[in-house]
Length: 315
Picture (cartoon, helix red, strand yellow):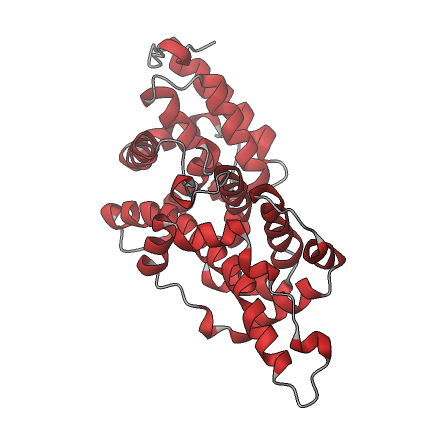
C-alpha cells in the first residue's frame, strides 16, 4: 500500500506539474493529485484482473487443443485444475473487485496476445506441472500457484511490462506499491468463504492520508515565495540554474512540514526527503539538501517558528 513516503512522492509529482504548467490552476492540480492515488488502485484492479484472465485462459487453451486437426490424448483430456483455484474463484466473487472492474471498465480484449502469451509461459513452467499433480489442495496451496503466476510469469513478461507502462504513466514508480498491494491481497484471502476475503486498501487510513497530501500540496503552493526566500538566503553562492528544480521542491515540502505539520518529527521529515532525493534528483542532491535544510531549520528554531507536539518533538 501507499505509505507516507509514497504519498510525499505523489505530492512532489503534482508540485512539479504545477510549476511546469503555464496556466496555473491549483484546484486542477489538486484533483490530479487525488487522481494519481486512484490510478494506483486502478492499476491494482487491472493486475488482479490479468491474473484472473490468465487462469481463465485454461478453458480457452483446452478448447483450442481439443479442436486441433489431429488432437492427441493429452489434448483431448487437458488438465483444468487451475479453474478450480480457490483464490481466483473467491476473487471473481468479490464485490469490491467486481465494482472495480465496472468502475475502470477493465477489459483485456485490446491486447489479445498478452493473456495467451502469459498462459503459454505458465504451461511450460515446471512449477505449473508440479501444481497440476498435487492433491489435497487448500486455499494456501492455491495461493502459491497464483503467487507464481504474478511474480514469475506476469512480472517477468516484457509484454506485460510494456502494456502497464503504456496504460499508467507512473508505472515505474508505482510498481513497488502494486506488488505490496498484491502481497496484502494474498494475505487477506485466507478463508474458504469468499465473503470473508477482502481486497487491499490503497493506504492505511485514507481519510488521514488524504488530508495529509492535500494540506502538504496546498501549503507548499501557498507559501512558495516565502519558502523560496528561505532557500535563496542559504544558497547565495549557488547560481539559481545550477540548483535542480526537484531539489528546490523537496526543500520547500520539507519546510512546509517543519512549520505546519506539528505531529511529524523534524528528523522524520528530513530523512524522508533525503531518501526521496536519492531516487528523484541528482547524485549530489542528498548532501546538498541536507546541508541547506540544516541551516534553515536552525534559523526557524531560533525564530520559534517550529512548534511540534506529541510524537513530533523537534529532537
